[in-house]
Length: 295
Image (cartoon, rainbow, N blue to C red; front, side, top):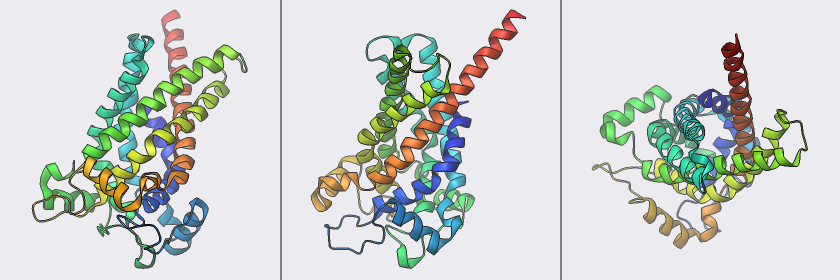
């Protein structure tokens, strides 16, 4: 159910993921004002990509994105549901720990799909290209090329940026969603089983995720998209801390918040849709099992 919920949300938010990736790669390791800015904001970037690459350009990497969402959130939300059922999230700090652990597991399992998704979404025609261009022909071609060039380990290149990214995002998303849902329910703004309770909680959660996750998202995108040398080592960054320091030194601390606009406009609706779908499906499943048990 977690996988289906997030795949459903991904279909609607993938164009924002394309724009976010381009904004985060624009001006990579360059001081402000020393590079040409193709992308200047969410709406302008969406219009530019649509005009230059066509409508298909706005859904670049969708297949890889669906693979990523399916594997990552199937593991992440499935694991979190088990910890919730076991009562582990009820103890102080339990939601944060369970959310972070679930996120780390999901990010590791789904890392190859995120790697391919980033490569494909960074690809563009030369006039608006930013970051390294890997020039893959499609999802299967990308997996095959990376495997031939770098082996199985190469498919998990960049996972050292993905795990902290999803740990932070997952912990803040799941902890704030659970807490906000309880808070909204106690205020009795809506009827107890109304979908508006989940929607309001998901909106609050989306803001929290955007603020905490954006710097990790920038680092993760840079680590995944960088070119590699003959020894399969990154040509730009040695790892998570090296990327963090280089971005701060060359682009300033605000470089870590590049693309925050599309991050919010993607994460907020994605969080709202995925959490809402997940919550509604769980309620339906519980009612079904209750009726089966009574009959």
